[in-house]
Amino acid sequence: MDRFNLIQENKRFNYSTKKIVIVFVFLFGIIPLYSQKDYSPIVLYWKTLSTVEKETYLFAYLTQIYDTHTSLIEDKGHGELTKWYFTNRAELAYNILDEFDRTDITKFIGWIDDFYTQEEYKDKPFHEALRYAYIYSQMKGESLLEKYESLLGKPSQVEE
Image 1: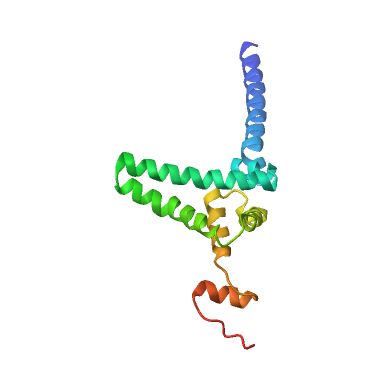
Image 2: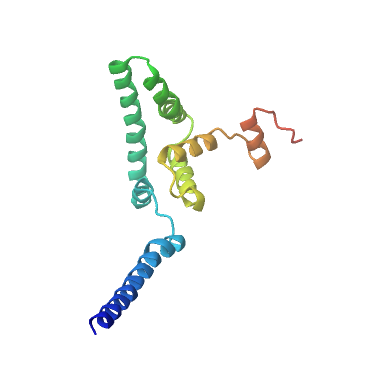
């Protein structure tokens, strides 16, 4: 009788263990496949701001990059880290700050908003949105063809 009870107890244990394993597989294996990718916290924050607040945020972000680059030069000199930071962050920020003399900041905000409305970009870092906006700021011309050619540095072939 003891042996029979032991076998029955083992079967119940195996059955409940199987149920737990199935639940874990479902929760941690199948559900993530169907869940949507989360937004970056920066994107969520950006979407909550008004236009005036976005102007403030954008200018503060670019100013922080300038301050960080200046501090790196003072603390580390013009070493590898400073060169990397300039190439990957500061150069773009400086170009955008220069572009503010020719292009209204609200256009940049519109381009950044446009960047984050595209599904494939919703979780991208903010500096990629800035690069997107900067590229748009460099497009000159009225038609799409003229804008594209201005990015390539070619004169427009459109006859007037």
